[in-house]
Length: 144
Image: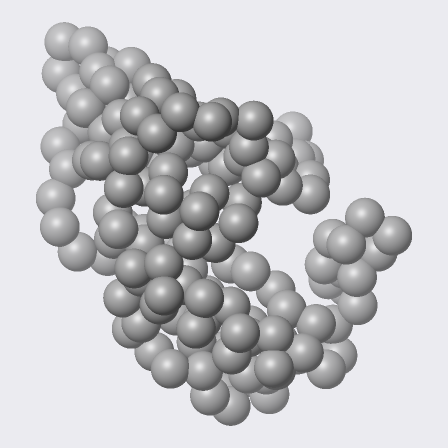
């Protein structure tokens, strides 16, 4: 089971979330409408899915849905850039799309350059670069 095919984000406002990812960050999808029941974005290696949070909770357990709260969910999503300038560009693009910048891009203790933002539902994204990273022919990060 050494693969992740789909990452599903439970969202409170499908229209705002779709606008953020599709229109603001240019994630690719075949969805043209503004308020669909579900959205799949075509990424390299995985798909990102938006699904209504209440429906996701009920899909997990209809009789006793997991509680949701505010605060850090215990995981982050990441975009790995090929240059420090690309990190700055993606963070600026996210801000224009309505993201909250929680950490401006900066040199970090592991030797790279990174910043963080949250999407309209509070999911944390890291945008990072390291001059030591390599990418394969499918633009996937190689970690050795």
